[in-house]
Length: 184
Ligand SMILES: CCC1=C(C)/C(=C/C2=NC(=C\c3[nH]c(/C=C4\NC(=O)[C@H](C)[C@H]4CC)c(C)c3CCC(=O)O)/C(CCC(=O)O)=C2C)NC1=O
Image (cartoon, rainbow, N blue to C red):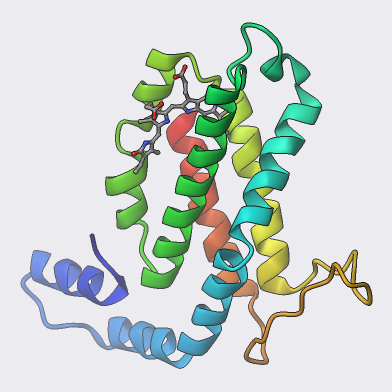
């Protein structure tokens, strides 16, 4: 499991070099954006159960055979496993976003997941759809464009550093894309 710093060291060591000025500038930016990164992680982690349950119910709404006999979210044991998997995936995405590196997601969550799903008959297309909805919701939470309920009791305002979080939102989106690619 690596983070932005250990990844830079491994890269430099592989070419028997000191850290380049470019790499150090990249890490300087990583440090400078540290509070924004923590806010982005918090925006997703603090809304995890909402993001997961919304994604799984959206996936089922669009494909109701999942909760009928023979569907992979039927009976409740499988529904629970599906919700749990959504939480596992979202959790590892937040770890990757915190570290600024995908290796924790790859090694501890995605490694062998496709094979497990094939063996159990978990439909990849449906899983990828749920991951896609989690991606959209997470990006909205990071960019604070989740304003549908703003002004009502349902809206939850997160405390965040001011500034442009679009780079962190696209980094987070790329981890969801990685999950989708690993399952496809
Ligand atoms: C730490 C990393 C980690 C991951 C990622 C993980 C995933 C994982 N998901 C599983 C099952 C499962 N996963 C699902 C998920 C779904 N079914 C659907 O229709 C949807 C598309 C989807 C939810 C979005 C289901 C239904 C099962 C149970 C399948 C069965 O037993 O028939 C299993 C088999 C064992 C079990 O049932 O607990 C594993 C190992 N376990 C881990 O330890």
